[in-house]
Image (tube, rainbow, N blue to C red; front, side):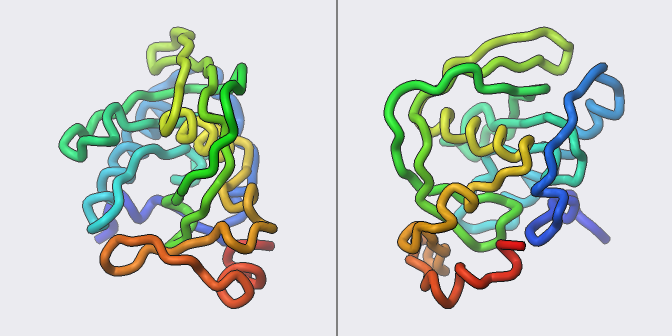
Length: 193
């Protein structure tokens, strides 16, 4: 029997490098996709000892729509609620560019130190179709940039492809360890096409 997390696609699936289409009308199909995204994220997390599922883009469940769900409180695993962003768009990048760790449910077992702006302004529509705006700082700003990249067919590894010291894996104790770039990253056919 398949579980919700099985709907998450991973590299080398080409759809992850495809631009998603805008949502026109919010239909029952769109609402069902949002529900599936949330269920897949939580089911993935429930099967991980050291990780939390903070967000997902619709492309990651192989639905090429510009939809993102982000956990309401990613510091508290007990809070399993999400905010939905339909057609999210970054309207302004602000602040400093900071390097920090990122992982991705669609890039198995690899983490990276990715440079991102530490403040962004985002506009999106809610599930009931109303436009709203958010100013995000710190980790939330990073999440928005990572997920909106997904809607444009960009993965976090694309930002650090040439940085030999930027790639990591999670060990059995939940600690990040540097990967051997030559052996594990550069010629990895799963990551690059």
